[in-house]
Structures are given as structure tokens and as C-alpha cells.
Image (cartoon, rainbow, N blue to C red; front, side, top):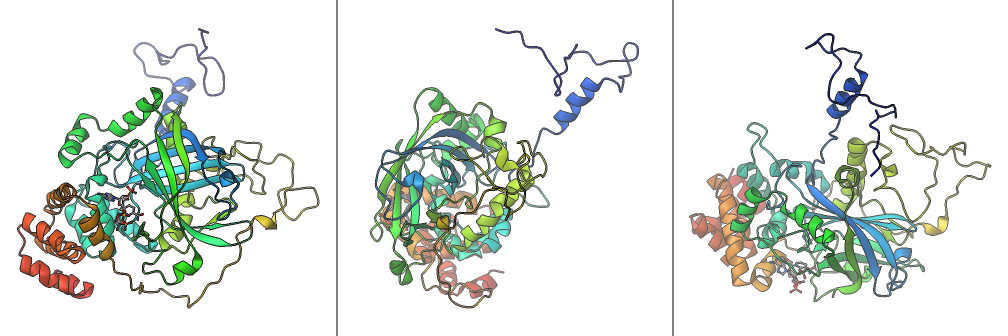
Length: 500
Ligand code: NDP
């Protein structure tokens, strides 16, 4: 092996990396030991801001392969032909914990994908759950505060957690999934990924469709039960990170079958559920999933910080053929993801190798900014329009115009769909008796830490989803069932007042 020479960051040789320069022996240390100064000052700056959410994660490279013709729905080139492969980078994560938190925590899992397509990078920033806790981005910072630490004690706080959720009834569907065993997946390989949001696909004729993505694990769904998760948190806080790395290293490449549900605009107009409400799914019987591809992860990153910590996904990274829907949470995320990356990594984070486009050339008039480490456009024009052969927009790549209706205002949510129907269906129709037993046990163990009035308010929401569900939670917490039933009959405002 070549004996490499140690240098400083500017390439000059280092004569000694073990002994600081001192005046006499033992010292003091001299200011002119510039090698020591450089080494310490770089070390002092090793940490970048931790992601506010999804701080702990693991990532890998692989490919997405198209297996069906979807050209009647979308003009996206990476989806244009069966057999076509596109390189992807995936990052899986927990949401609420810090960078050193345990992989086995009860939490949704992030399922973020970057497709390096020939028309630019396309990101799908999903979760392992098909729904979310809230449907308005204005609630997001408050919601996340409640999942993190109490401002006084710096401890996780069941009062904060359940106070917010019990005052936010639209969360009941996601709460039911989170407290099922799917809230503690056995590994990142053993979980599904969902776009959760509705997106728009449009084809070459300008027709558009609403779409939701499902990534179904080919390793099979496997979860940790509560007791296993508790043990795993202590035994190996990094178990899912380790599992992903080791599986890929051993050549056991995890894969997911990719399905979409497609809704025509005319179907959306009078559908019984709001298709743009992220707290709802589209029942499979109404919109059967269609298999369109397969994703395989087959390469580990070489450097965690460079490729996983600095990976930056955004649902605003669209390619022609794919666009946003009016889903309010999605609209908020279109802003928030790029914004957080500019804060975390700087305005030129798109130049970092893991984030930069690989399938096409990037050409625009944006220049300068911190850490601009490419040639910054060289001597080419930095304004548009110009008559010096600079890059020109292609009007044929835009999203077709669409109609909007109504008043600009802070609109109360008035869609007649009921927030309790789908969690009730999940509890009654989809879960087995074992699933239900685990769900109740998981809820009782956690909600039991909150004040009684909050327990009552939350139990009333479970009761509204399904009376057996509410009754069993009430029994587990030794709550007065009559009081839970009385609260369940009240409006949300009355219930909040009665349990204030
Ligand atoms: P289906 O019976 O057609 O589908 C139910 C789906 O539920 C399954 O395909 C499976 O999705 C998922 N599932 C199974 N066990 C659990 C569990 N313990 N926790 C969470 N999800 C589970 O019924 P519907 O489409 O009418 O949906 C009924 C309910 O199922 C929904 O209200 C929702 O709570 C849940 N669900 C629905 C999904 C959808 O897109 N329609 C997706 C996931 C859950 P998968 O194959 O994706 O694992």
C-alpha cells in the first residue's frame, strides 16, 4: 500500500501530528502551532445543525425499474418505458428523536427517495404510514414541539403529546397506525413506504390525474412488539441502521414493489373522502393499486456524513409530468424542505454530490453564495434574457394550466368526510384480534402517563372511531366509561371545554 503523506487542508506536509509546539517543556503551547490551530478549529465546526425532524436516519443507493406502461398518465421520462432504470438514493429515518436516538422508538419512519432522472432530480419524501396527524401546515411546528421535549424539564412529556393530539381529532387515524405494531418496524427493510400526499401526474396531451404512491416491501412487513422494541432500544439503539448496512454488504439487496392509485379529476370532484386530505387513504376497493415498478437498494454510501447527513430531499423537486396537488400539508412542505436545507447546508447544497443532478446538466443564472464550489457558471452570462447563447426556458415542459375556485381566506375545514370512519375501519376490518390487543396495550402504556382529563378526552376520540376500541382503552386506563361515552357525544369544542 502507498505510504500517503499527511498534509494540512491546503496540501502542505505535516511534520508531527502527536506533539504540540511548546515553549520549553512542558509548555505553554505556542500560537504559532498553526497545524494545531487548524485541527482544533475544524473539529470545533464538525457538527452542522441537526434536522429538526427526521434527525436519525440511514441511507443507501439503488435503482428504480419501470415494469408497466404509465405513459397515458404521465409524461415523466424516467417512467416512460417498461424496463427503464433510474438511479435512486433512499434515506429512512425516525422523526421525533435526536441524531443519537434509538431506531426502535415508536414513531413514523421517514421514507425519502431521490430519483436521479434525465429531466432533473425527482424526490418523493414519504413515510411508512399512508396518512399523517394533521392536514394544515400551520399546525406543524406546534405538533412537532409536542412530540419532542418539555421546554422546562427537557423530558419527553405524555401530557404535551396527548394534549395536542386529543385537541386535534383529525390525528386519530395516524395515532391508530402509530400505536399499532407498525409504529415499531422490525427493520427499515420490513416496512412499506407511502407518498401519503396526493400528487398530480399529467401526460403528453396535457390531461391530468391524481396519484398516490405505495412502496410495498418485498421482505414482508415485520414489526417489533412493544416489549421487543423496549429491549432493542437498550441493546442496540442503531439496530435498523446496522441491519440496512449489513444486508446490503452481504448482497441481500432490499426491494419494494411500487404501486400507484390513480384518481381521475372527475372522480375527485364528488368522492366521499377529500382526496387532498392527508389524514385519509383512498380505500383500495375504490382505487385499486396498480403495480408500476420495483425499487432495489444495492449500494451502501462510502461516507455517512457526506452522503446521508448531507442528503437533502424536497417534495418540491418535481420533473415534467409530476406536480403538486392542493393537499395543504404538501403545499407547506414545498416551502419548508428547501428552506431547512438552506439553513442546514447552505444555499448551494444542491452542488453536494449526493444532491446534485446526475442524469442531466444543470444550467441557470443563479450564482455565488456560500460554498459555491463548482466553476459558478464561469464566464457565461449571469442574466436572462441575453444574446450570448445562454440557456433558455422550454415552455413545453410546464404543468398545464388548471382552474381554481373560491375565496382567498383562512378557510375552516368543512369537508363532510368523517375523521373517525377510516380509523374505525382499520380497527374493525383490517386488524386481527392480536393487532387490536397490541394496539390497546401500546396506547395504555403511553397515554397512562398523561393527566386523567387528557386521558378521558383522548379515550373519547378512540370511542368515536369504534366503541369497542374506546371501551378497551378506557378499561385499560381504569377510566369511567360513562364519562368517556358522554365526552364522545360532545362536539370537539364542548369536549375541550369539559376537559380543560
Ligand atoms: P383494504 O382491506 O383494501 O386495505 C387495508 C390495508 O391496510 C392493507 O392492504 C394493508 O396495507 C394495511 N394494513 C394491514 N394491517 C395494517 C395495520 N395493522 N396497520 C395499518 N395498516 C394495515 O382496506 P381499505 O383500503 O379500505 O383501507 C382500510 C384501512 O386500512 C384504512 O382506513 C387505513 O387505515 C388502512 N390502510 C389503507 C391503505 C390504503 O391505501 N387504502 C394503506 C394502508 C393502510 P399495505 O398493503 O399497504 O400494507
